[in-house]
Amino acid sequence: MDRNPSPPPEQADGEEGEDLDAIGDTVYSKHWLFSTLTHLIQMVTEHSEENSEAQMQLSDDEEEDLCRVWDMAMDKDVAGFLQEFKAADILLGVIAKSRCPRLTEICVGILGNIACFPDTCATLSQNEDLGAVLLLLLGDADPPTLLETTRLLLTCLSQKDFCSLWLQRIRQQTSVCFNLCFIMSSSTNTDLLEKVGELVDKLFDLDEELMKCWLTALPSAREERDGEINPDLSLSLLEAAKQLRSESPNGLKVYLHILQLLTTVEEGIQVFAAPDGPGKPVWEFVSDVVCEDLCQPNDLPVVLHEQKSVLIQALSVLQALYRCQDQWRSKNDTSLSLIGSVFRVCLHQSEFKREVSDKDEANDDQLQTLAEITSEFLADLCINIHKDTVADLIKKDYLTQKTCQAAAACLLPNYRTSVQHLQAALSETDPQLADVMRTQFPV
Image (cartoon, rainbow, N blue to C red; front, side, top):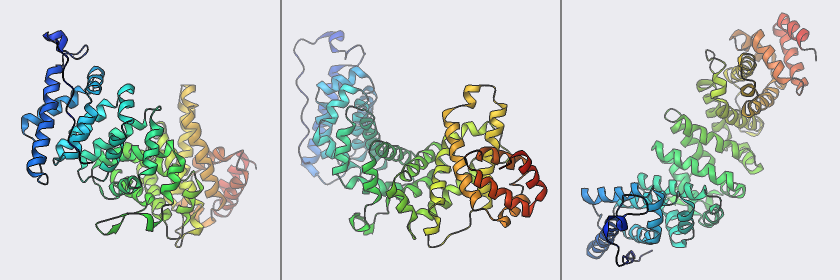
C-alpha cells in the first residue's frame, strides 16, 4: 500500500461553543482531535516527500498528543466520532507511510481501542485494505507494534458477527501462520507471547480446519526468514511455553490449552506420534510442569481447585502423548515422579471432596472433568505398570495406602482391569498392602 493518508472531512459550519465542540457526553474537543489528526497527516506526508527511507522521530509533544488520542479512543462516543471522521482510513494511510515504529504502534493501538465497540468494529472489519495491512504487520520487527496488532486482531475475532470475515482473511494469507510461529519460537517478550498465544488459541477454538491446515504444513511450504526455515507449529508453541513457564502462569495455561486442542484432532496425534516429531519434547516439558509446578506433596487439597484448569490441560496432553510413545524412535520409561503426581492428584481429589463444605463447589464441572481425565490417564498407566516400578513408587513414598485407596476409588467402577493389574503388582511387592486393597476394593 503506497497512498497518502486521506484528510479528515471538513468540520460542519456553526459548531461553536464548548457544548457543540464536545464529543458526545465527553469533555473531549472535536476541534482538538481534528487538529491533531490533521497535523499527523501533514507530518507523515512531509517526511515521506523529503526522505521516504529515513526513520522518522516523533517529538515529545507529538507523541503525547497521539497517546492522548489513543486513550480517548477507549470512550464509546470518541470511537464513534473517529469512525465518522474516517479515522480508520487516516490511520491506515499513516501506517502505510510510517517510518517510525512508535507511530505505527500508536496508530494500531488507537484502532484497537476503536474496535472494542460493535458498531466501530463493524466498520474496521469491513475495510479490506485495513484487514490486509494488519495481517502483514504480523511480520513487523517491532515488538510493541506486534503486540498492538495482535490485540486488535483478537478484539475483532472476539466479535461474533465479524469473526468469520477475519477467519477467511487469515486462511487466505499464508504468512500469518509463518509470522506467528516465528514470534512464538524466537521472542522473549512476555506480553507479546501471551497475546500471540491468546490469538492462536482463539483461532483454533473458532476454526478447527485452520488448526489442521497449520498443523500439517509441510517444511517445503513454510517460508524462510534470514535463510532459516520457520519451525513447525507444535515446536513453536513449545518454545513459547518454555519462555512463559517461570514468568507467566496464565500465559503457560494458554499454551497448554492450545497443545490440548492439537491432541483433539487426528492430524495432531499423527504429528505427535511421528518417530522424530515434537511428541517427545512436548511430553518431557509437560511432565516436568506437572511434577515440579503443580499439586506438590505439601500442598493443601484446596490447591487442586486453584489449579484445576491447568491440570486438565496438562493431563489431557500427557494422556494423548502416552498413547503415542510406542511410535517414537527413542522412548523413556514414564518417570516415577509423574506417576506419583497422578496418584497425588487422585488423593487431593478425594480429600478435597471430603473437606469442602460447599456441595456445589465439590461438584464443580471442571473438577468433574479433571476427575475423568485423571482416571483415564491413571488407567493407562496402571494397565502397563511393572512390579519393579510399583516397588520404586513405594520406596519413594509416592505409593502409600492412602494414595492407593484414592487411586482405586478414582478408577472404579470404569477401569476394573487397571485396578486388577495394580493389585497384582502390589501382591509381588507389598502383599500386606495388596490384601488391604483387595478387601476394600474387591474386583
